[in-house]
Image 1 (tube, rainbow, N blue to C red):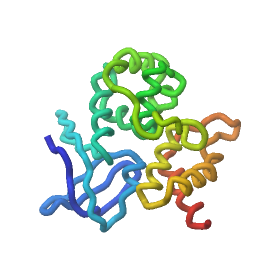
Image 2: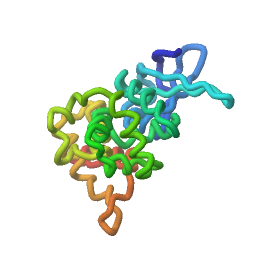
Image 3: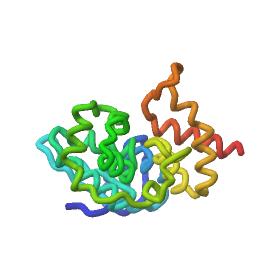
Length: 206
């Protein structure tokens, strides 16, 4: 198992980063929030999970061990592979996922692309006793308001990891919230990378 990778970032894309680890350049698949929290030329360390399949070996990178733990746990659910597991973490923070499962909140779970009501019910049934209690900002009761949704938490995490304060991140999240809505007022589905870029632009103008 590759427990972590450490090196210099050579390329960043919305769903992956390339890290120079010496004689090799290694690509790590990650969430948009993780990808946008690093910059080309800086040294980073990502917690990793290695998935081996017949068609290749894929390294998945995470900002902390809790994300990796949840990534691996959700794959124990029938029908959930690495791609859907990353989709869950791109939409919901680990704590938000824990709370949704604990509360049997199918509405929140079905916001994840690729998860329907049957899949959400399966997540609740098979994960309820595996994910453990929520911790961090969601458990502390900050799940309402600007930080309440999955994309809000991801954008906030990306901004604070780049050095912005929690208050500045909250203001930026409020500023870009209209971009997360479709013209009819319904959620258009989270485009975390685009929302984080818009949030950064709003902070640069302030």
